[in-house]
Length: 239
Image 1 (cartoon, rainbow, N blue to C red):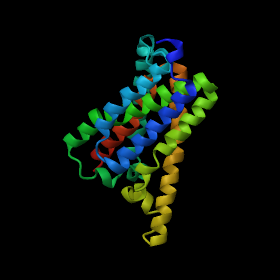
Image 2 (cartoon, rainbow, N blue to C red):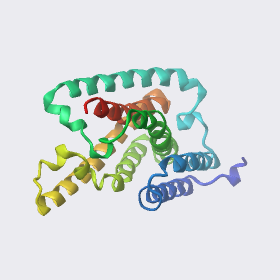
Image 3 (cartoon, one colour):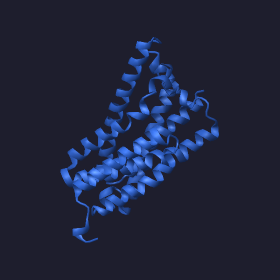
Image 4 (spheres, one colour):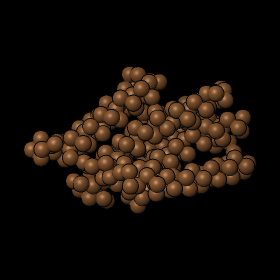
């Protein structure tokens, strides 16, 4: 693509953020439950914006030369998450944290679907390409690594505001901390949502650093998948 026809960096950043805002609203307000389809539509759109801005695949963490190294990193990270979850499941003090009302009625087949399809394709693919691939890559080119990490991670935290609104009621271990009164319920919801945003923003920093050090999207993808998918598996096995 000729230089004059490229999308300017600031325009690409603004367009990417606008697409993510619209996607978040579609997923959690207008078409709840269509996340898998939305991911398959939005991910290539974001990659098209990336290429339109003049970005290369290695700059987005998708270069072929990083696949082997990235896969090794991902395997180690998945193993570490599995070990942490195993210890957490065995300790009485932390076992209740895996209880989640949203997943209490899932069958084995439904858990497998979430682990193998919904989480990797409907969640990890879109979020890692968006926040650690396209947005991070654009911001690195425009403002440098530190700004890219901070902005991408803050927006990643904000991305989780809507899906975390009912977290306190879904997690008995959280709602029980504030009692069952109306004030306690509201306080639990606020604290849970703020906590989720802060936690995911901090996770975003870690994901960005993994992306930077490995040069690949595979390590943050592996860690992201393990955190979500193995959580489903652990909660199912502890029922």
